[in-house]
Length: 461
Ligand code: MV4
Image 1 (cartoon, rainbow, N blue to C red):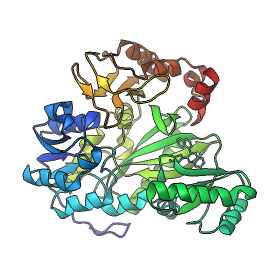
Image 2 (cartoon, helix red, strand yellow):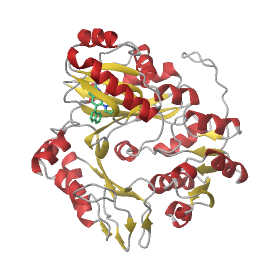
Image 3 (tube, rainbow, N blue to C red):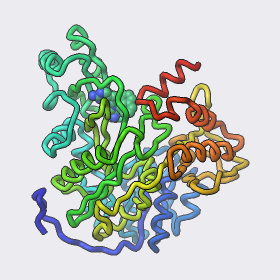
Image 4 (tube, rainbow, N blue to C red):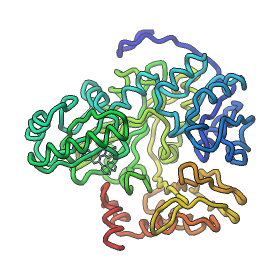
């Protein structure tokens, strides 16, 4: 079949019967659930300390792939590939983090005759390079932040572009994302020093000192669109998530739909996104991140994987994203057209971290008492159980509380109720912080941006 994007695709259909889940914690459980709902067998992989983890207990089989350190276990590509081949799996689901956006791993999975549940290695690589992603976005007709056409090589070039788009500008690393390797530059006098600092930081963090420039947006919201694309040329978007409630580039609360969008605004940018991804020939689940300020969208990055906050979208649309990732990977076509996607609910996701509520440093430890909240509109994605010890080696996200309501108001009330029910003894968590956020007038009115939480914490400390 020939596509508008130029790619020739085989219409390969392969019924997936067994999936290796190359991850741990709540996301491994989430994938395990989708597989079992579909009658697909699962193979868990785990580090030594995770032998007693919930994802291992609930999978049909489990393989120890190395010692506790992620680099030697969940990032151990040869061990994971070996486990997949020896256990007779058809497909590998990378989950979130770890190897999910490693183009080389996706390539190796495929070259071993296995299905990688995700997009092509080429698209993963492309979107991992923020300069290339930006250029591609322009080519595909997505609105981007005004800035450099490509890489900035010299201080003179930086000054020319900055003068063109107007100060302040933001210098970013091509290898960046997640907030590292960025510098706000206020005026021409600061360009040389900031550029040097940005390049040094980028080289240390990503092994690449390539930088580019964008106009600095001072008070944006972070709004991202979920998409699904199959191998038959069908692309749909599932609406947006507002992820502006964050601290030090860690998302704390995500909600959908965003309070600032009308259906008209959503449909307009949604249509642009769908057209762009059709042209790209993208496959699988993906998220386009935008900054949204003064009524305008600006593309910043694309995530070529499932995201932590995907349940928000599942809750407002009723569409099981992981199920569709697996179906798409098996060559099936999407059973929905855009007009079938209806956003009919409101959803708030609270990320529950095991951490000190004041210093916010991770506080792993043993859970002796555990009571998860329940009732209407309450979903808890967590690998916790009474008797489980949260290991110190990995992410300190221990649960996602995903609350759905008919209206935002009802959703907020249920979220507060559920947070109060949740008992994870004796761990210290950020549940008190969530309750505090939920009682702020600005949160209740929806009047927040990416800086609001940090400024609120500073004001009230
Ligand atoms: C920006 C920006 C303002 N203007 N780009 C931070 C991480 C990376 N994903 C992009 N980031 C930003 N890019 C321009 N042109 C502000 C941020 C930013 C941010 C973005 C999303 C969520 C939280 C953030 C916190 C601080 C800065």
